[in-house]
Length: 503
Image 1 (spheres, rainbow, N blue to C red):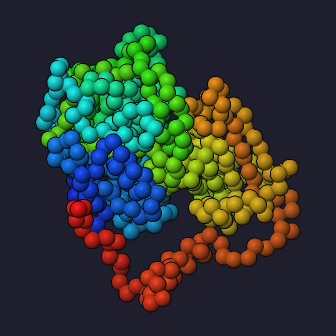
Image 2 (cartoon, one colour):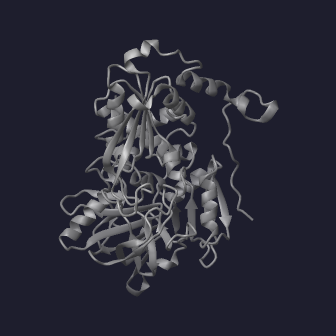
Image 3 (cartoon, helix red, strand yellow):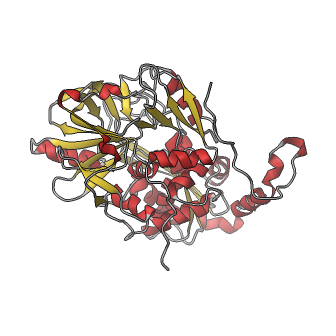
């Protein structure tokens, strides 16, 4: 069966905003300061369920039209818009459709064009000025202003044609220099270190204000050797239009808002950080990191920064990764040959990394241990994980209470726990001593009914996971609208009206 492409009808961030606004999913805020207000408001949005996307404008000290969009993909409705799926799609259909759209062989390489909106303004030489954009100070103790949070950093493997796009944070030093931090082991870090090992400059393009689909691609585990351009093009159903930057020779999105290009050089470093990270801590402190000498800036008229600052989990990417990273985990565990896998979930409270759950239909002795070890060490689970729980298929892996009930009633510490030592961690891991960063351990919990006497295990009360979902689908309206709630007579209208500018 041929899987059709998604209905991605926007071309750039501006069209996405227009469509999200039509769904009542965007609010306008004017007059918020980059020094404090924008970071505070974004934290509030991240930690409020079903909060809108917010477009900041009239930022003090900057021209009208120099904007920041925050909280873009924080709801399933807006994630569905980003992926080109029906906006009322439910969790598992969204995951299944996402996996279909990202099957091997569907990638579409980008298309090189000569010009695009990003070239409306070209700044070189003395005109280069990173400070012309309203980069916020997202957290009070950050070491500087971070223009690169919802960012696409573009690097190319010096030994092949593989172009990597990663969401590697970017801090402003001054008008012509920014720091680019890349965690150890990431594809971009591997490319950078290849250049450094040869004493060669590493070309980098920092793209700020790309469309939300390309950002999603930059923040997920894309297969080895596959460019995020091609992967996202496979979802979109048409190649991304890119322009070859004359300075670095790297492809930059023709319809993005801002791109800064230049080179990282071995030994050319300045202090970077601290920065509030996705673990909920200023976890990596301040240290020397490579500096990008910005040689050219390209930007659209009235440019928009896509802001995705980390916050205590769950924050925006955790809310969409609960769907997408969970889908990728499910694919990888199955692809490794583990049979009977029913579902998988990456919990937002653990940053979609620190706590993973997999449900299985047990088929043989050791089955649960197999699933746990594969989930912990596959590509999706390997980086900075902490705990993996394997449960029976009557447990809803998306429900933390249900998963912990299984842990507390079906596992016994002396037979149910494994520990993996010296696994892949990094500087952002708050549980590791500052002088010992790099490795961590993993706790694997077999919370299934013990295989040897599963037939004697007490029968659980209550419905299974699927029955609970069906009940909520049919009768969930009772939980809404107060004492006078009635069953819906027609499909629900959008949750919000058209946004109006804030006072």
